[in-house]
Image 1 (cartoon, rainbow over the protein chains, first blue to last red):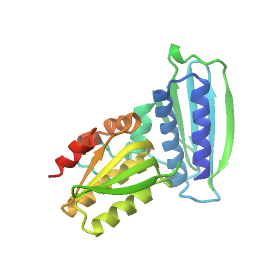
Image 2: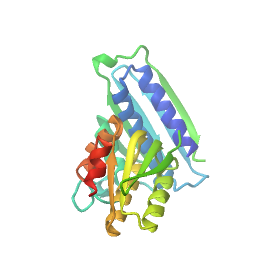
Image 3: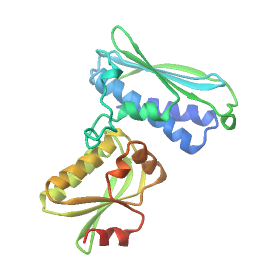
Length: 142
Length: 114
């Protein structure tokens, strides 16, 4: 789970550099954390030989975060709706929903092997970045 | 910051004062164990005070739901007190705000168990 904390910290740094207010920052960071947890837990199944890679970019208009795992792949269409009455009291299954709720765009891409999520949050005028940054990092799942 | 849990009792209600994060690996297991321990001891009225919980993730939400359903299955009750803005935000988005009895005032919450 160290890589999740590392990705979460990087996302927090990105939102702060973009000038996001605390509420918006919380939502973006939470979505990124959920994606990282999914990659480590459901994607790579805690396999220490598999990696999670993450990249963080502020292009001046949007924050673009990609999280990729090396697991068996994920079909987002098969994920049950956690708001459906029959699922509301389930203990799991809210991660992807939270990611979609808190971001403007979420794109899934199947890798061979693995899944890549591209998470996009558009910047509002109030959160115009001071600078445009890009950072790539590869992280172990340990 | 990991989760800390302090327990106290008022008028037949067991209050868990939670502080920190309820996330995968950082509090969700502690919360699960605390609830199971209380239910196992026959405690019926459990109030989770979340005023010092500054972060919850989907795993933490799952633990709150599990606490709620476990309690119901044992004819016990779990209510929530003093949600922070962030926790309230997440509970509203996931519609769990409609599932729990939620209070801003401890005295009112305690009376509601009667």
